[in-house]
Length: 187
Image (cartoon, rainbow, N blue to C red; front, side, top):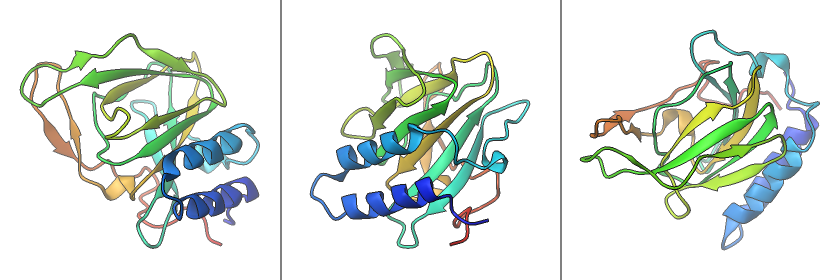
């Protein structure tokens, strides 16, 4: 499958932004342009699972500098409290998501940081160690929600952490629903 033009354009913008001294805001703006239109994501990358959210790899930078993924949420689905360990940007393509930031140190129970906030289509949120890296995300829509994420690594192969409600920390690697570790699109 050929890379959809809006995604190819976003990939080029991310590559250009990475050459700048502070790329995350530029990458967030590129993601905002990508999620401003909902006519490019093939259905194969927007399929929900009945029991849990899905993460599909759309693009992995050959040099390992970034990845772009779609997250697909069925009604009522959510993540555990987790971190990323790298910069990222999250943009809602369709539906809605609720994000609850947390403070967690791995020994005491995670503590919510303020109220949760809802992201609607077109909204973009920056995440990462410098701007808030630990959160829980849930589908805030009665139907399927889809968000597009850009991370500063191949996030499906990156060591991350889950923070259980009772305290502690557990390592995990998320992987991808499409079984990919390389680009989901050819060309």
